[in-house]
Length: 183
Length: 294
Image: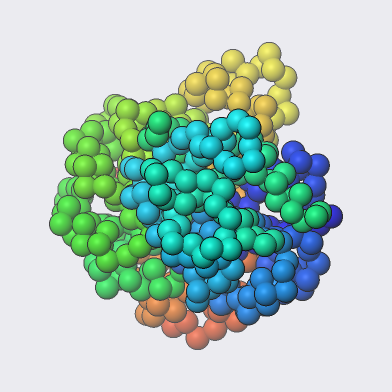
C-alpha cells in the first residue's frame, strides 16, 4: 500500500511519521505523476489559502478533483478538511465550513474528544481550526464539540478532521484511514 | 475541557507554517498582496527592516490600530514584533489577539539582560538565533518557533546562511558526541542541559526553525530551504522590490519546491529589480542588528 502526503506546505513530515508508526511508508506527492502512484492521499494541516494557491500553481487542482470523483481515499486534517469541503476546491464533503471557526491562535486548544467507533477519547489538537456545519445527510458525523460543531466526518472514501492527529501520538485516526484504503 | 496555550498548541501553530513564506507588511494593501500570493502569515509592522535602518532612532512595537486593521483584512495568521525583553509590549500584542509574537532584534532592545519569559503567555513566540546556544536559550524561555537572525534589512543572505549552517553543524556535533560529554557541551553553549540531551536524542531542534534576515529572491529562499530551513521570513525583500506581487508569488513557489530549478528559473524571469540591499561586510558593528539579545 502506498499512501501519499500532499507536499505543498504544512505538517507533511508529521503525517509521514504517523504512517511509519502504522507500518506504512508515506510518499510525498507534489505532481500529477506522483498522485497517480498512490492508493490513498493525506492532505495535511497548513494554511488552506497558501495550499490552494500552490494547487493552482502546480496544476494539481483539476487532477485532485478528478481523484475525488474517482473515489481515491483521501484524509484531510484542518486545512485538508477546508479544501475537501470548499465547493471551489475539492468539493468532496457537502457541508458548510467555518474557517478559523474557534477563533485566532490564542483560542487554539487541546481537548479529549469522543469519536464514533473509538472506545477511548481521542486527544484533539485544534490550531486555528475550522469546523463544519449543516453537512449533507450522507455525510457521517464522527465527532462534535460545543454541542453542534462538527469536527470529524466520513463520506465514502473521504475522512476529514478539524484537529491534528498528526501532532498527537495516537495513531487511531490514521489507522482508520488505512482501513478505509484497504477496504 | 479545552486547554489553551499548551506547548503542543503553540509549537503546532509553527508546524502548520512549514514550507511557507511569512512576509513583512506595513499596511492593509500589502497584507492583501501577501495573502493573494500565498503567504502563510504576515508580519505587521510600520516600517520594514531596511526602512528602520534608514530612519535610525528607536524602533518600537507598531501602532495596535495598524495591526488590528491588518488582522481584520486577511484570514491568514498575523504576527507582530515586540522589543526584546519588553514584557508590556508583548502583553499588549497578546491582548489584541495577534497570532504570534516575534521578540525581535529588528526593534531596539528594551532589556539588555533578560528576554521575555515566554512560557507565561498563551500566544506563541518566535525568536532569532545565530547559533545553537542562542536557539536553546530561547526555547528554554518558551519560544515555540525559531528563525535565523541573518542581518535584517540588508538583502544580503550571507548572515542567514552563516547562522543556519552554524546551528545545523552544532546539532550534528551533539548527535555524534558521547552522552557523558553533554554537560560540557551545555556549559560551552550556555544552553539548558535537558535541551542539549533532547538534541542528542532526536537529532534536530524540538521546534520549527525558519530562515530570516537578508532573503530577497526566489533563489535565496530555495538556498535556505536546501540548507535545512523549515520555511522563510521575507522582510524588506518583497515590498522594497520593483514588483512586490511578482516577487511574493515567485518566492512562495521557490520555497514550496526548492529543488525544482527549472521552475525557479521560470518564476525568476523578468521579475524586475530586487531590493537594492547593503553588503553586510561594509556594515559597522554598531549598525548590526543580529548581535542584539543573545
